[in-house]
Length: 425
Image 1: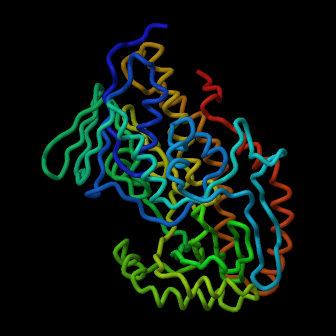
Image 2: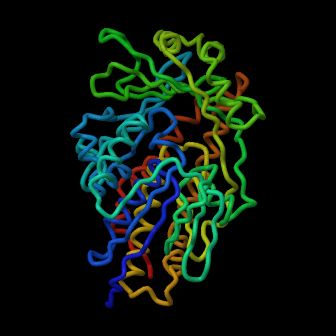
Image 3: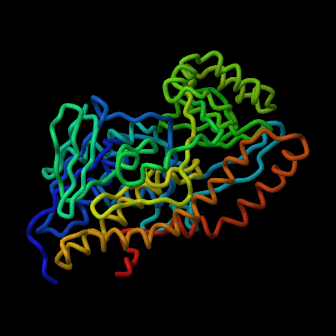
């Protein structure tokens, strides 16, 4: 096939995990003689990420391995390996286990991976280290977008300082509050608060501190779910995150930030919900957590526009949803599948000069998977809603059955390698 020798100029809005991994995937899967020139633009003064510790499932780690990031994670000893996720009722006992060990105990898939609990900050540092090695990628911080204009041939961003930036393609990897979406791709599609908030922090624990879990646990109560998990290999710190129903503060992000700054009020609320646990360490971990931060969970409508002829939204900018166990992995899959679609279009000689064909192929592949994940995420919202005694009792009966029933489909997804999936065009 003929290959156009002119590299694409690609602009990525968003210097978080989504934007950085998109840049790496676009570089990794591009035709070797047409590696794109990529500019990453971040609104913050330095690359940063907000949030606690995420669970990277086997399929997510497989992608990071393809992008050379997993090697850095291992070299820096970031995160804590997870053999299994344990589920508890805080008033009784263990309800179920979801494991990542696979049939031979080495992990799931080929090559096999287990799971990894890692802070968002450490994950970002690992990705940044690989980004710095790429000659075709530049990262500029402290730039606020005020306008986006698209023509048949290119797309131009204008920043607050008046300086424009023009490229062949614009990638909106700028999260739930995406400027790319709100100013250009789908301005009417605004985020909405789910009624669920994650209040999280970290507890430093002594070596002899006894916990009820091997690495990570979901602890159910009538008023939410408390996640407790080691996130470092030395097991010196426990991530504590309370996913619970919280009324909308109604004053935007600043209001949530202010509420989160009052750690003792948040701690008192969490203790009211989980402090009567019969599992001794639950109350102790809440009391030992040094600070708490409020992370409101926003979502987008299930259906919406992801692209124009030269702009594409990826990750939360396109399909933000409540956490359903694989949120970060879904973003990684986005980046790889899109990059492969674009690379194939480039290999075919960029027919017509517009990447629309690649965009359409990506959306046809991706939208069914996102629709399924969206439905799964609805169960998370219902599971943290305050429940009466009967409703909660029924829930504790259903959880073990649900985990058993869905295991095969979960493992099938964990085995998947999206670097090899058929693109269909």
